[in-house]
Image 1 (tube, protein in one colour):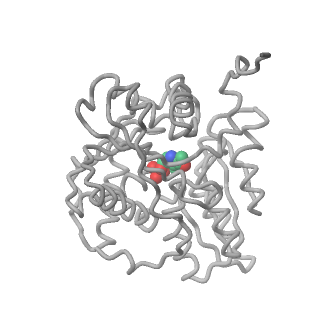
Image 2: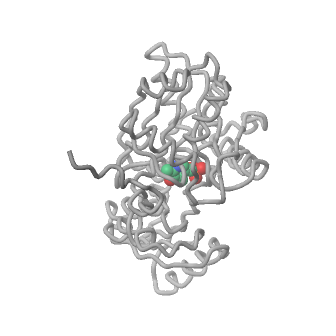
Image 3: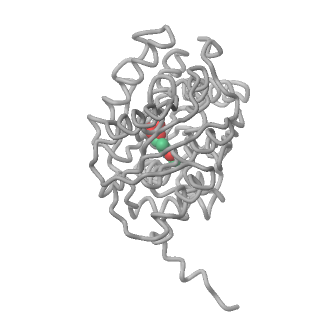
Length: 337
Ligand SMILES: *Cc1c(COP(=O)(O)O)cnc(C)c1O
């Protein structure tokens, strides 16, 4: 499998570190490692960097002068797209869907929204439940009528081109493990628009790594999440020239940790944020990585990983924390000594 056949801009800081989490491992009685894709670079980093390397190269190849994408108000994907566009000298427009209805000031203007604007992107807000892909097509057509060459990136950068970034991440992780003689029994991460898991599963299957990948859901119910990942993995394998390499049973998602809905913090997610921050000095975000970590922690406590060496893929997202300060009660941290 030869990924260099596909156009790519090389902006990511790779390979990302693979580190042991000693204190969390001790706490949970399972050997836990972390793959630091929160350190990929581009506006604090995160999983969208790997996807955007391939997507933005395609935009350049097509002669685009503007990129357009969509996501929730605190989309990490939008923020990273804005950073890539800035570095490449392209215009960037982000359609934001209000999936939570939060009136909170910081949620609507801080965190990722602040960073979108700092990178020079324009944003436009839509009510929750809107047909965002259709809205984006409309906006793209309007800009094309004004003479722009618009490259449209789907929400989360999840299509076969974006997923190539996570095929590459699977190769990278397995080669790090091989170099160190570190046998990995399972890979766990937060899954959403599905490009990350689809790419990982395709890469792992194509290599015959035999490392199971468990996605922890952040939005959709299990059958829908698994179907989305499987469909995209099949298309990604086709793009790579190895159709049929991914089997349906290779795609596993656990959606027990979504809580009330997308972007709404959960008690177990807040606990996960505190545990990673206080035991490992690592920041998670309430929308994705905290829910992924909540699944990791709960399953570890229930003995699901007995005797295993588990790698948690940190997909990033901490840039959203400034928009979610309402979710934390830190009053007890103010003390007088
Ligand atoms: C987008 C995102 C995810 C989910 O990745 P998908 O490829 O959309 O499934 C996980 N974590 C963070 C921090 C994200 O921004």
